[in-house]
Image: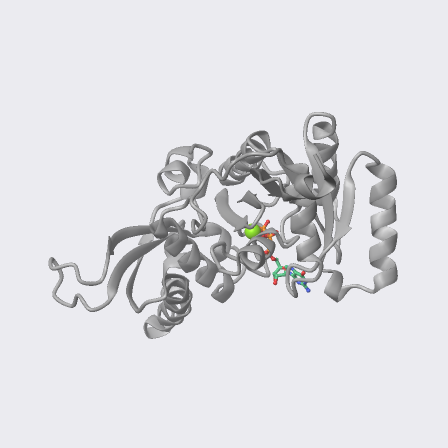
Amino acid sequence: MSMLEKEEEFTSGFVAIVGAPNSGKSTLLNKLLRRKIAMVAPKPQSTRHRIAGILTERNFQIIFWDTPGYHASERVLNKEMIARTLSAVRDSDVCLWLVDGIRRGASHELTGELVRSLLGEKKVLIAVNKADAVPRAEILELKNSLEEEFPEAVVAEVSAKTGYRLRSLKKSLAGLLEPGEALYPDDALTDQPVRVIASELVREAVFRLTEKEIPYSTAVTVDEYREAGDPARKDSAKTYIAATIHVEKENQKRIVIGKGGSKLVSIGKLAREHIERFLGEEVFLELFVRLTRDWSKNLKSVRDFGYGDKL
Ligand SMILES: Nc1nc2c(ncn2[C@@H]2O[C@H](COP(=O)(O)OP(=O)(O)OP(=O)(O)O)[C@@H](O)[C@H]2O)c(=O)[nH]1
Ligand SMILES: [Mg+2]
């Protein structure tokens, strides 16, 4: 077989994106897919789901798993999130470790240990992210030290924000995958139902517009989803989505609703804009706030809300 034919060979498989909280995993997934399917927030520990994003190009199909940031915690919710990261890694062919180019703490070290334990059984690609925001010399120094520490792995640099070196990242990943056929239709974007994406986009709005413990104390469920034109509805011109924001404590309910309902209105507006962009159509979004006392400490409610480690 000539070099050219080999290059043309179609490869496919699963890539788990792992990394410390806030390293930019969800931003990277959205940028790779050119569509926002995963929530992104300036605060750490935003992703709770393991969301597959499917990228099909001429000679490869990569199914990316966006995973919750890897960190140590004893909290029930967080333990389930970490279990999701580990199961995504287990089910993947390649592990893409996204390193935060700006700052690295205990969670970076912890992810390093996880990655080290995978070497030998999984292919690993390490990408230093946020190259747009860090002086070049620092990026190179960081890459060098990672290459020394992980000689078996390929080390790259990217910016999930600007798209810098994403083409080369995609090519490297496709090259690490085995030859194989596409597993999804070539226009598929995600394995998640629209309701899950919608609930994540509401949660992102809560994450962005509330402070302190509130982002970590809220869960979002979509209770009703009716597509436009459903005859069972009076106003059937728009898709109707009813979602509940669950809080853990009485005072949190007041904060999420805000004075005269103002906070809830802003959350609804931001969430609706993102959902409409995702769906490409107008949406009528109705939000409710409910107290589910201490839900994040209770395995049953964590699982009922869809954040458990079961697929
Ligand atoms: N400057 C810069 N900022 C970035 C880049 N990628 C992500 N960010 C920012 O980093 C923050 C975290 O991004 P996320 O994509 O939510 O990070 P994550 O790794 O998914 O976080 P968790 O889900 O909490 O683990 C956001 O404020 C992003 O805008 C990048 O390439 N450059
Ligand atoms: Mg994320």
